[in-house]
Image 1 (spheres, rainbow, N blue to C red):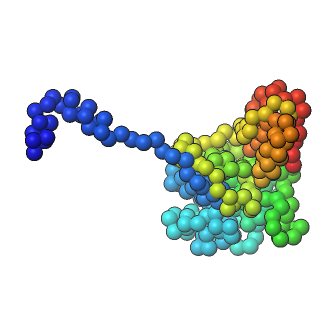
Image 2 (image 1 turned 135 degrees about the vertical axis):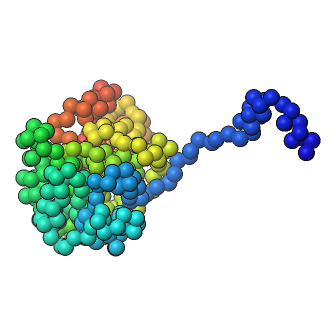
Image 3 (image 1 turned 180 degrees about the horizontal axis):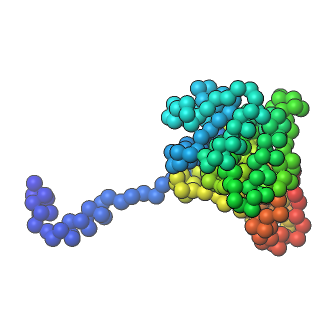
Length: 296
């Protein structure tokens, strides 16, 4: 009581200053987040932010997605925004493209990008060409996403990489995340983009945890499409890659470092055809080291 009485006799400024010294806010720490969780967080935040965003695809609702990327979203947003579709990629991709042209922002999930071949006319001739050929008069804000590339025991028909296929198509933006930070920042940017964006995920990376820095935990966190990132500093050679091969490149750089060869590891994150932004991002790397090695 004596302490309390003493405090009450002090000027208010002294009391408030004393309280501020005793109680302080600690900076947020980095979290361990898997790539799967990061994509889920990014979609969840955009669904919450914009009621025009919705997700459709095979088993994305009650089943939480074939790879559980959409876990919990159906329970939170319901049937109108998390929509299960029949096994007809051409059909539901066409519905999604039409919805985008009408002003919505669909996320169209392919259970694997190998199945996107069933919908290639919708992706290339309907989505990619419309905004491109209309000179920006008719936006097509759609995201095509799903696992891409080689995986474990899924045979040749489910192991193809479509980075080069889609990366050379005018009117499409193509992103290929590696880490959890990439996955969250790029999926959010893709959803907000007025262009059709292909998000090539990797099945073998879904369960891999990465540190998610404090800034990436913000609901306003975005990674601009076309912005590369230097993952490892080096002076002798630059290794450029995207998606899962980034891990292999960084491992190789560690091995070469023991031999006195310092490799700079850069991931492009976006396969944007003839994008001057991407070239500007890579140019400092190529000026630092003369030889440049591109990893598929």
